[in-house]
Image 1 (cartoon, rainbow, N blue to C red):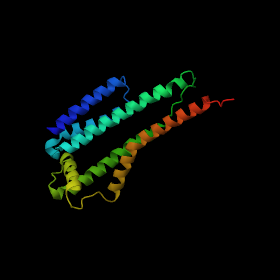
Image 2: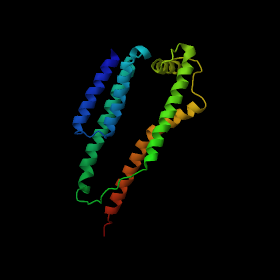
Image 3: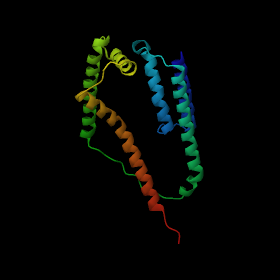
Length: 199
């Protein structure tokens, strides 16, 4: 019941943020809330398999945390626009250049990620079989999570599957970090090209 209330609260907050940012889905607070909303939705769709039930404290932490993050991000954006935005109104910028990568980079990344997920999934299934797993990935994910969090059993990925798990996590964060780095560098370069010292 608390998980359903949390999901509906996050969904309402997401709709409110989309309206507040006028449909700009790349805002950090929207992406932050989307992640938690999808996670709770995924848990609700697999609640029997994973024995998914969030406590009241967890729901409060997630709900209050996402609300606080969204409110802070919106406040920073309003402050930035009111204090700094009027200084950059009359600047002219050049045409932005797209970063183009060869097709083999995308294909290689997808193949590596798919292969890594296959190997890690098979390892998780084989690790959970002695503890009541039935060979399905849904059951294995929930059981592996429960064994890692609530038991003293030494169930953990090791060797190549462990390294592949770390690599796929890094690949998930790398595009976000690269986008933010390029975006910040572009803003800094544009600002420095327009800055002229007082005489």
